[in-house]
Length: 331
Image (cartoon, rainbow, N blue to C red):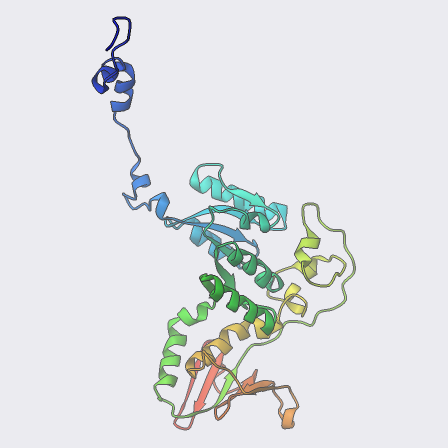
């Protein structure tokens, strides 16, 4: 039995009656922006792909601007060994989103430590492609990496096997496959328009040879040791780290595969596609002078021979020659 001094049990109704102010606060209408719900042309935050973007050189410009303008993704972090570049990228992201949320890192490992980032763009010099992509995949992230995917065949096999083992999405920047003219040429070759293909010419050109460079002072805010990464040490010189298409780091085997890994990553890919050889490859490669050849190239077993930088007939990037005709594509 209850004593007169005992308090009556608090019912839900009594609680509500005695909490009028609190109830009013709870019952007040809450305004939720349409953007948070995915209305009005916006993608809800829960549906956006969150990105970490690594390497702010020439090739990143297009990727950065397109992703920054894409409502279905959100850039959470940027990374570069050059302080000026990464801070400029961070400021651009914050200005676009109207906040100060974008993180800015010198070390790519700090992006990998974050569980709120879904995928990474790896747009560094070639020698960093595989190490950074491996770190991303092993920490549960998907990867877009610029071509060439790897600096060596062994590296490429390692990255492909790791992506498969972890169930990661790994996309390589072979945009030439998306260009309609190359797709049409491939369609014609694969459908026998020029008959059995016996010879293919691919125009790659060449970068200037790498030369010994004098040592220069390392600019303030530039982490040269991290730029070198797994490669041998050489004195800093601005031309060594430059990312232009007239040479720069692309002229040195330590950092890139020269033109074979540059235009070759595009043209040889189209050739593989046209011949239905995506899951196989050539029988052997040959240098200039092999059996008297004036050109470098390779040959498929029971298939065509590919010559690099042969003048061909059309002056095209790629020329296919069959027993019924020929096709040239790209200028």
